[in-house]
Image 1 (tube, rainbow, N blue to C red):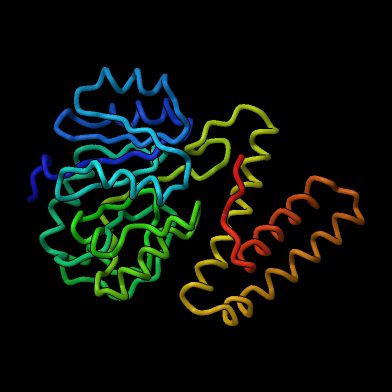
Image 2: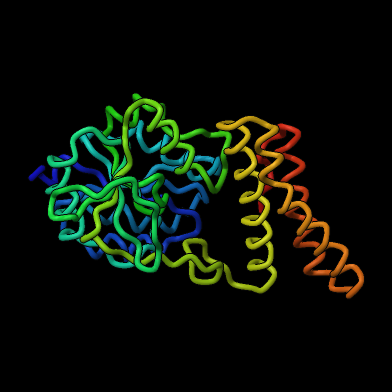
Length: 285
């Protein structure tokens, strides 16, 4: 099994101080931590200074993939494991499963755990006690990388601010012969809700703004991904049902005078139009 001193755990934090600190507490001092914070949280910095096996770096908020690329510059180990701090209670034993299985997998683009309640399409199941699957893509909330392979693939596409960055990475990895794997015995939960997720929200207004941000970026990134890998005509064809639904909802909520829901779908339409025109994913809180 690969030694723990060959791996760094990377946490991407945006107003996630309490989650980050609790996450680190689940591990022993044998694990190195690198926290990338894009919210300029000085209180988190003060907390991290008190933890011997952790360091923090600040950067402008350029998105999840950009934060991982930034983290890579400071990783000195052969492997690094990226987590969103709202995944539930991984620990040393969880990481040990990956370190034990790496030698059986060989050449890989990224390796992830099995998320409870989520099913990935599997290309094939390995013969290693049926514990490792080769899958199409991977959840960005828990991804293990080999440093040299990550560099060979080219890291993440920083045009993508949020959503589909891991799908794009997996697609480019596959084109270069690096496959994506899931370790089935490493099970984990991920809190995906707006209120209970990685970003701390305190008011209904903040929750609404975050929902709109996520919705805008999801549709921007989805069209960008399909346009990038399959061409604009196919991307547009795939999006026709989505656009019809959006226009129907806008009309429906206009007639119902439901301003909040109308704005929600106008927001989605704006994200699609931005992506269709080739404009940057520039929507922020």
